[in-house]
Image 1 (tube, helix red, strand yellow):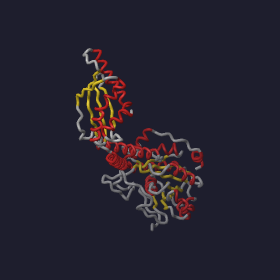
Image 2: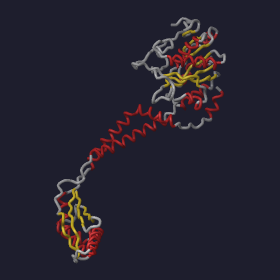
Image 3: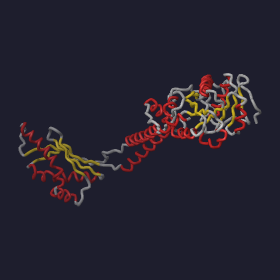
Image 4: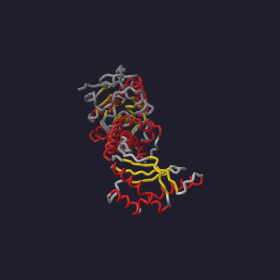
Length: 432
């Protein structure tokens, strides 16, 4: 495995493939959609409750006037002057409101030291219409302050803009209904949007941090190792798992079988006369046992004498098997437990590495490669298992679907299974 050291010691930066990223997003969303929906619902309820808690009804009392100067002529010039007078009154109103003169008069009329309301003035553009309004949480306070302003404002304004007269055309009414109705739907929609954006942010982060092997090209470009084949995920129409994921099982589709026949050809070519092949993976549930069994069957179909041994066999059994078969396959445990079979691993001449699609992280796979570098056996390549197709797939596989798993459903004896004496194989030794 010396040729892999250069890649592992100097890992290149991985470029983001937009197509893969989009598929990652779809895949992450298919797993985390419930979280996005939950965050949207929680945020919607939270914003609604916050809106209810912070809501304070406000009341507005207002009156509209026309502004006239002392000269009541109907000429165009005086109308223009009246417009300017109204605008000037609106502009000076905030300053007059802060003046002690107006405030003291209004407070005196109301018999209070504080005004429980906010006055404002507005002029309708290009007219001499002037609106005076007061907003307050207390409808009675808004109405009373407005009445006091109507009474005292003209007299105070006379000191600033001269003699004016306010003709009321809309009398103030008591504000019995708040003007700022609670907008429940608006708060809920805003909260739902915030929750959805937060959920999609988590989905995006999940997609970006996956950093797993998704395609055959990932094996060659990111791990600098040959990919000898891709095994499709087998899915039954009923969705139930089949314990017998074998090439000789009539319920398993042709794509699954053909993928192993192709893997057998590539493996035989890559072995280059080596006999003992160790089959391992980064972690459990990646499909080492399924690969080992079906690879043995496929090699047997091609006329090879094959022995399949369990990972807990003894070195003497491996040496004995080499004399009885063309190829000896060792169904080893995951690489993280490789220390448990060091004596057997030392008998291996080649290594086939099983990688389940989108499962183990790339740094973890690289660490296992580093551990395997300490062995004399040569890594002949990798096989990608559980390959999905469809909207969340990556362009490989056939969409059948049973899962793969290490050590499930099979029992091995001292020498395990032997293949090759007949098409489809038969036992080469007694199985316990």
